[in-house]
Image (tube, rainbow, N blue to C red; front, side, top):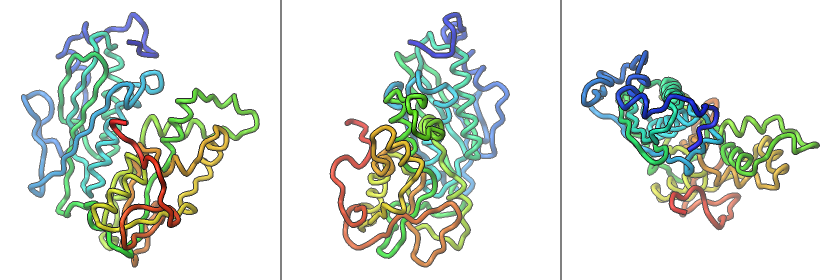
Length: 332
């Protein structure tokens, strides 16, 4: 297995050993207030201030969810934490702790593992949490499994089932950028190949694909006067995830294609012969937040109105149902 950026003489996990790896990735780390006892004992102790915590888990597998020739260890670590933190925040909870299991081949450079851990810690701290512990095992390829804990802070969880006809649909965060970044990486597209096209944002969308940027604060700092009726993390694609809200709530959602337009993506789509709206609706891995709000609310800064909840079922765009895949399919 090749690890770009690490020489053939790099010290490996095999040479350092399991406990050496654990010591290396935990050295100098400071636990957040949500972790009462971190690595060192048989299990961690995580706080549950209001006698509950939100918990979720997600897994990344090499060449299915990330590629070593595209992403650094730091990128992969941040992505692993971000997609779990976003699920916690999508329940209206504040991330408090993460537990990570990591499988890798014995020839994995220890510096890669350290970079991975650094990325995980960087994103955990951005989300206001820390990494409480985990496990390291030998595996034929890289596998990362993260379990995330969140503090509801006395609030009831925000479910997908609360949308009602008349609500507005809004989004916080970038839509379609991860899909555009994937298209550029997968196509082997280099900016110098485009002589008459503005390529200044190519690197930006590629960066978003490598490292999602969930806008945690747009949910966690909402004033009490603003009521979200339903909320989801846009991980599989906007159509798919808003579709889960529609199905769970027993309503229909109509999205406005004009409100979804993104000039940056349109330039890139024209350059590569793609459709920007397809990236926005079905691209996946954006980890933006889609929510429904009561109609009377003034949307807070950072939220953009993109549609409305109506009577009926399913999701339409400008009143028209779209055929084909609505987003990511794990077993497609």
